[in-house]
Image 1 (cartoon, rainbow, N blue to C red):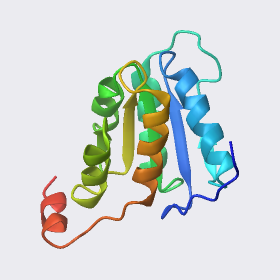
Image 2: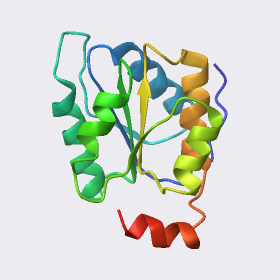
Image 3: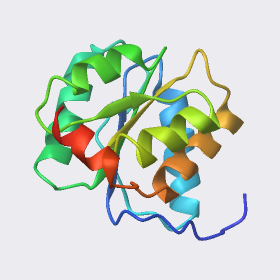
Image 4: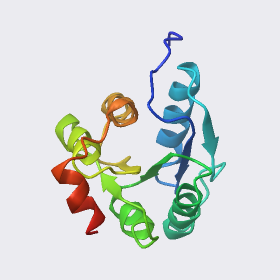
Length: 150
């Protein structure tokens, strides 16, 4: 892959997965490193079976404490990770599966975590979704009023 800088609006990005998402997590991490994105890998560090809520909560707490601006979670469907992360106050984790769902998660919902399903979303699309997520700004305005109600 080429070393093309990704103009992310975020300074610090963290990433985590479960065993089902491990390979895609590694591919996303390497893709972002190749594009000069500062990324913190929160594990796991192999594909041995783990419990996704542990990693989702660990990453969500890092985002909540502002040690990272945003996070990327990967499991088989994305859903388990998103549900677990959303239990943490101030977290807005969105399962993203196409360009529109990803764009709107940032523009309208100010999502601070993208959750991807490694068994449902191909690698090439996943990389595009992560890039779009990291480049898309929250629109604020009427959406801010709604996000504050969450």
